[in-house]
Length: 229
Image (cartoon, rainbow, N blue to C red; front, side):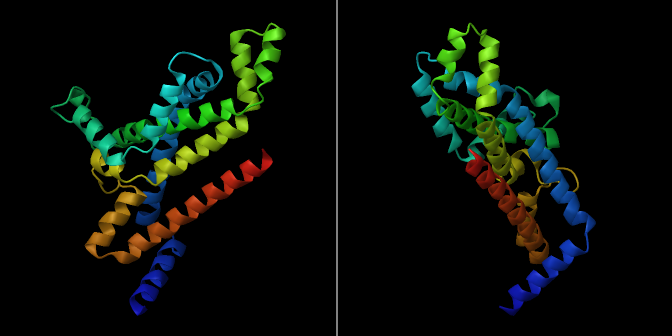
């Protein structure tokens, strides 16, 4: 118990002192996760609205596939992308492996099925009278999509917040594609794994406390949004 108490006190001291190495890792994690979610949101928002609003053959199967992909182990995604981005892979000439761009791509691929599934579900749960009403008023297709977006915007934002939390807590993809390079691709999760294995429990614990705080804030935001619906 003395060891844990001493480590906890040291971890809190690192946070309160504004340790540059600690907060550089935090900033890297936040930047990579935000960029990954933003990249995934560009196709996911319109496609998710389409999946939820436009009946087409195979839609139920597609939603089942998306739900299955949400639960795919992250190391599998990391392994597949590693094969594509490695020097011997088809995209090896791009030189992306072990760069922040590779981690962003990996986390983008990770959260894309989650966004599509959650946004599609939010649209399916919307007022079923909305589309028939818009059609009776002669609304154009893009107008229908826009009004669906406005109607389900709370669910869409909740999906984005959930995806951010998923990306921030990811370790397999970040480790395999980023290489855990200090000052470059090291994120909170990969740093926690490394520092704890090195015996630097205080730094790992400090990062864990920050990660828990961010996760708490994300969940609090989600809970507040759900109470407004």
